[in-house]
Length: 189
Image 1 (cartoon, rainbow, N blue to C red):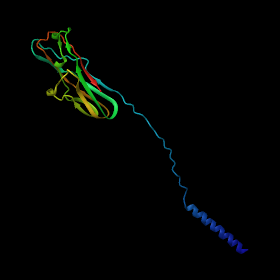
Image 2: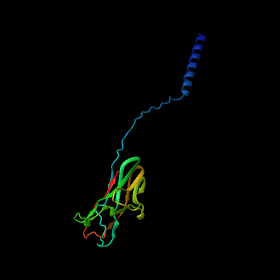
Image 3: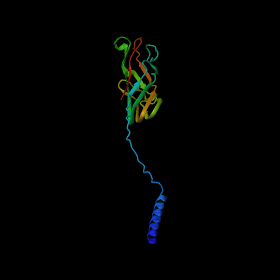
């Protein structure tokens, strides 16, 4: 009988040692679990717009002399809210003829007598390569046909560009006295 009890003692002791060794392995490690969520949103582009002065007075000059009426037109601003990547825009400018009530040649000064130059940018925000249509007085162009006033390339995101162009009207010696009215139009594409 003694032999059987030693065998039970050895088996019990061996079991305790194995159980004790298992305790040294430490607690079970937690495996990380993730839950990914694909998240999306949309940025909508805004508008491309231009503002220009509602009116501008070129001053007063005497009749019978070959002279000019000139002034800064007022600030013209392009606002590009399209949020483009490498976008572009171009502003063109035209003029109507100038009349003082009637339609005779002496009461009309043709738009070919109106000169325009944009000058440099006066203000701007955002990323764009801005190019004036006419940098200086020596680059002035007649408004007998549509001309580029300002342009931008390499536009990234939203931006604004402003300039204050100069307009000169060359007065023919035969023009009659009166208040002449015409329209200068800036277009944007």
